[in-house]
Length: 408
Image 1 (spheres, rainbow, N blue to C red):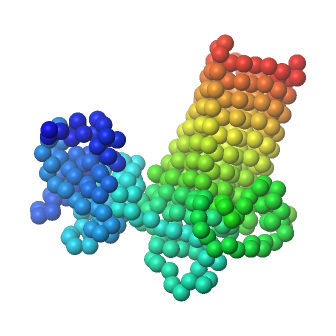
Image 2 (tube, helix red, strand yellow):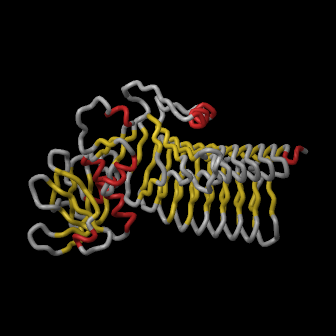
Image 3 (tube, rainbow, N blue to C red):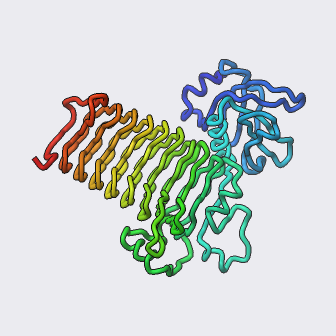
């Protein structure tokens, strides 16, 4: 049975579809631009006249043996949000999307289909190796500098002393946890070794990215960033402290999964600003000298199944007309509030456990709004929820469990 594109994408898993959507492509014979509906499979990119069409108009073979790479091509095409796919035996393919986030997603998905992967390993791995490939790197910075956008950067266990890693292209940073890496005895300055011991960090089995020069570890300024299984530490050097973060986001979009952030400097774990968008899942943010997470400047943050604890100020601080959505998290033993909402911001809390914070579980002020449903809020020193003025709104129902706040 000949199915239309619409029928195929209705069941993407059944048909092993990686991605789909409209792109405007350049003709292979006449250099005109035509809008077509594309479907991406593991080793093929096919397109139709539109989503209702049953007839495939063209097929691009994009496996490793056919395709060299995919990258942004705004200048080459003289179009915004453009990409090109380079082939070993045919002319490049050019297309552009409607918005930047759309084309960045295509870059990631096509790169996955091609298998364009960069590998980062600790320096000692290369000491006895005569040569390394063009896709192997000794540092994360080298891999980021080489990336054109869309690459997956696999980072092998070890301690990486790097800072101010600025990400301006869509990439995936993936920590590898199981490997046959060469055994190596790490020898560090005493304060670094003490920090690793204090927080049970093991460079033999974990990817540990350590900034100790006063700069933030990562600065994200791109869409479609993915980070997984990374342990990001910002520490002070020689008792000098600096206001820097583990991760700063400046008008970017990112997803963090199974990561850990620790900041013993004068800063937060995550600083999300300038209309950035961030999703966190199964992340630990703790022992930061400021807040665990700061969301500001009309940014949007979704946090789920995460642990935010032992931060010197608030667990989560949402301000500047921003939005935070928290579901299924634990926020505990922070130096002030579990969640603080201020300056016309909105926070939605569902099924979180907020306990043993030094002030309130939740604090709402300056014309902000908070919706609280099915949460456990207990053992906070001052109270469960504090509303600082009548202009702020707290919406709570009977599904919340409040107990022993203010040690009543």
